[in-house]
Image 1 (tube, rainbow, N blue to C red):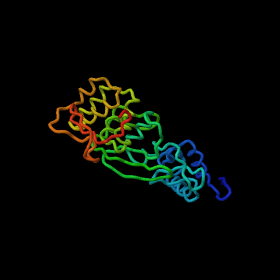
Image 2 (image 1 turned 180 degrees about the vertical axis):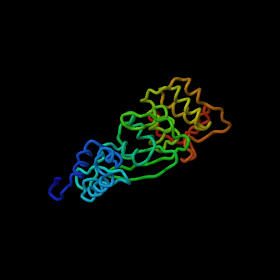
Image 3 (image 1 turned 135 degrees about the vertical axis):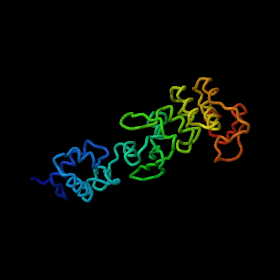
Image 4 (image 1 turned 90 degrees about the vertical axis):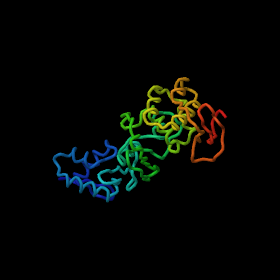
Length: 256
């Protein structure tokens, strides 16, 4: 039975096998390592993982999840979307989904994960991983490029529903203007999950985006008795849209 060493540490054969296997895995999981090393006792694998953490070659994210450290004790994050889904069970959403679908020009360091019932936040390296609970609205995902992410059409719904996680309505409208969704599916999501006020907000934002057929806004529009604020959390003044009964108190639109 051989041992391996670098400048500071010796590595046993199980540790070395884990290091070899970890070069192809992201993130590294206890389950995957135990499965790949069938001839080795699961407890021996777990002990080796813990030893590699102590030696700075692996970083323990949480129970059963590890990252490789190319520099001792400093984890390497190769795929932040995949790591986010390992930390929080759900799908990639909001601004991260806009980035995934190529609809925004920057790569944010906050990774949004939509979950059914858990809201939480975790910082790791340069990244912040945020889980946003959406209850029954946490649906409409697809497996794409190695991760579960909201479909383009559901991304539009989610970002209009909670614009604070997507940079605000003007950025959402700009992203929508760059997209080519199935507009029938967009409308269906708002009819299925949206309140009357949300549907009118969606109609307003999509109309500002300027790339949807006219029937989309007409299909989303609901007759409201009173005006509603485009963003209820902001200042109480703005421009009236009598057709959609919206008071636009957001501002910052590119075409204003």
